Image (tube, rainbow, N blue to C red):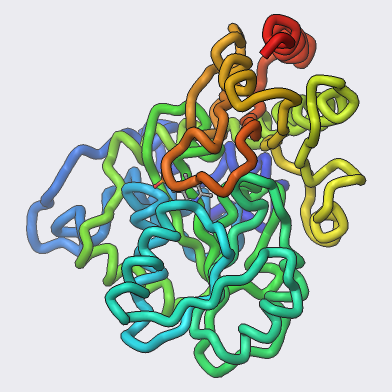
Length: 374
Ligand SMILES: *Cc1c(COP(=O)(O)O)cnc(C)c1O
């Protein structure tokens, strides 16, 4: 009898799921490098149905999130698949400052007169509840890039909706271990598996997970048409990464909680944003439904923007790099990124990895000490 994800702890499912236990089969599904298959066959071409490797990745992630999963060549390919089902004249409700790729797609469609965009602050719960009655798609991102704002997901997902309105949640920063939007009533969860799920900064991948069989089939059709299918090597690496997701998240979140508290107490830091801090503006929302606080911190350093950049350049264990979710810690000054000019100039986004917490703390302390004249 096949193992069911709901019968075991998520950490067990991540390790035990998605395996072919037939006698003689390898324990790990190998990367199946094939574009086409001998006919007649249910799977004839891999852009349509993927390969056994991509299907194994989808089985693991669908079981973990509690729905049907479909994998994509990147998080943006997945996001695009949800957004571009909106017809001409539709209304998209989205955060004022969503992930910049999502913002780019929305602005383009708005400028071409295709969609009406309703822009809402993530913590404007009543605004989202009202939007559920008028918009065709509610696109949420929580915790949000780069200020770690958490929305009241249970209230928004359970609000009465116009017929056909769907709620989609970009859950990349949380991972399926820290929040389960589908259980709260969301229709679709999107992940950039490039981040925590892959976990080693060595692949691009995306996921859409939905409880609706109809939406799943529609996404499948759209993936076939657009060609955003994940590659076999990426699916293989993503499975390898996902096997250790629970271990990595446990360590990274413990590190992040400790470092957020130390940064909050530091004279070199003006402001810390981390959902786990009781003082954080959206901590109360997070406490309603998150099963952890994640491993992402944003903090504003005291002094000039040049000092914040210098701190990123001084660290020797933390990596000065964009992106997030790797086993290795990364940080960057977010306002230095194009299209992010509204962000406080000294804000550093810190993706906390699995190194020893004292080593990370010392790395930051040294960088602070070496830049105090800036
Ligand atoms: C990285 C990211 C994306 C885009 O994912 P890609 O895999 O880079 O295409 C979308 N949303 C969030 C929150 C992200 O961090």
